[in-house]
Structures are given as structure tokens and as C-alpha cells.
Length: 197
Image 1 (cartoon, rainbow, N blue to C red):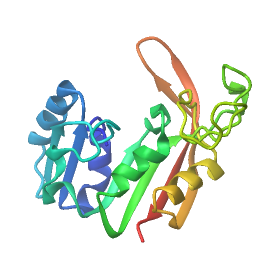
Image 2 (image 1 turned 120 degrees about the vertical axis):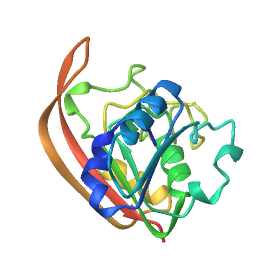
Image 3 (image 1 turned 180 degrees about the horizontal axis):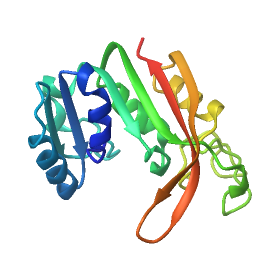
Image 4 (image 1 turned 180 degrees about the vertical axis):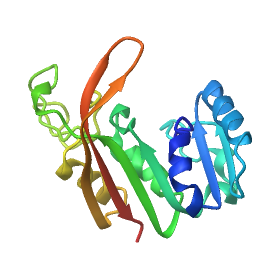
């Protein structure tokens, strides 16, 4: 739940009454809130500094209020592959949805050319659940950051986070070019959705 994509709000603006962003970066939150304050909109847009996904804080008191619960829609976009434990991240966000609420994830389709994990011997789903060779099979294990997901992997994430109902998956862009100050890359982008039962 990052506050870094005003584009999400622009696309959904006519259909929503409130948008809440949560980001650990005070600078991103400030930028989003400045952007939101310049929009003439009847919907309320705000971002707050925080980390809903910190495993060391199972019940963040900052987010106990009703304004951080009961959402119709939660969007996690183009950064989901950075989480060490995607199931944990999806579960934390999905818990903020009302019954019948939808989790939507946009991210990169796995690049089959990226090769195996660096240690070369792990047999895991890359979802924070491992069954490796003598590595405490079946326990939650720290895994390398992903380069993306395939449909089966992301479906498992949704099911594990209790938002697998009405699961849908679609590749929405092929070869989309992403540029940073250091490099550019072409990636296929998917959109996946699921409903909280």
C-alpha cells in the first residue's frame, strides 16, 4: 500500500469516494498529499506515514481506526515482487477489506530467463514458504526477492491470504518499458484480483 501512484486515483477517481495511501517514506507521503491537494475532486484523498507490513508489529496501533478498515478495494501495484514474503503482505492488506472487498495486485509477470535462485538448490515457491534441502522444510524461510510471478504463484498468494474467491488474472501489458535514472527494462505486467469471503 504505497502512496506513490496518483495514476491509480486518476483512473478510479470517478468511481471512488475515498483513497487512502500508506507508505513508510515521509517524502512520498508528502508528495502524494501535495498532489492530492491540487485536485478538484469530491472524493477524499490522503496518505499517511506508516508500515502496515512490518512483521515485528502484528497490530499497528496507527491503523486501528475505522478509516483504515472496511475497504471495498485495496490496490498493491508494481512493487509486490519486492516483498520477502508476498503471502504475509497480501494477508495484511486483505485483512483491511470488508467482506466482499477486492484485492487488486499489479506486478511483473515472471521472467523465465531470470534463472534459478542464487544458491541454486532451494525448492520453494518464492512466497515465504519453503521446503528446501535440510533448511527446515515446511517452515517459513527468508527467500530472495522475486523478479515477478506467474499465474499459479499469484493465485496461491490470493488463496493463502483468504482473497481467492472470484480469482482473476490477466496480462495487461507486454514489453512495457520502465525507466529509472540508472536503467530501463521491458516487462510484461499482469493484473490479478480476488474477493474476500
